[in-house]
Picture 1: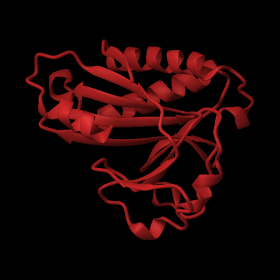
Picture 2: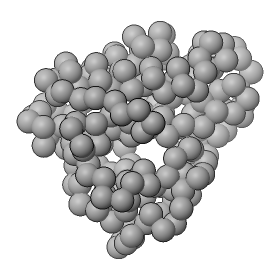
Picture 3: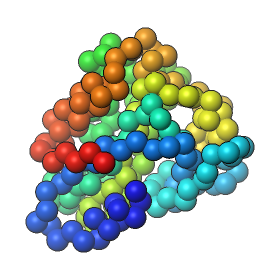
Length: 193
């Protein structure tokens, strides 16, 4: 999926519509550009993929919504901080819709429920275009997060919506998140992969 995002982004001329790609990943750890291998404590049988996104190490797997935000941030007038804020606010809006009280932490991108992280962000901006995006934990095996220091923070606990009492089909949550992203980002075309 990384090659497809890079190809899409490198081929952009500024005339294409922005897209949100909704994807599902098999179990995989991804290490961002600033990622330090010492934050990978135990790979076990999960592969490690180097990524050109920002950030440290995270886990993707079934039961998690991953949305790649392929946006012309220059045309939208978004700086990196404004883009990150828009994504975080859309996640907060979505979680609130399902009764989950979540919050942001200064200096720590992502969304938290108490001390536990429920959503992560990792972006790359190239030539005024963004790719990579966000992940929201819905109902997943959280054990692999104990094999890493999530986002480079030793001992950071991770949660999902199911652990917060939300028992709603993932596709319902996905549609709600897309709605909130479109509102926060204005109009972006949806393409599911």
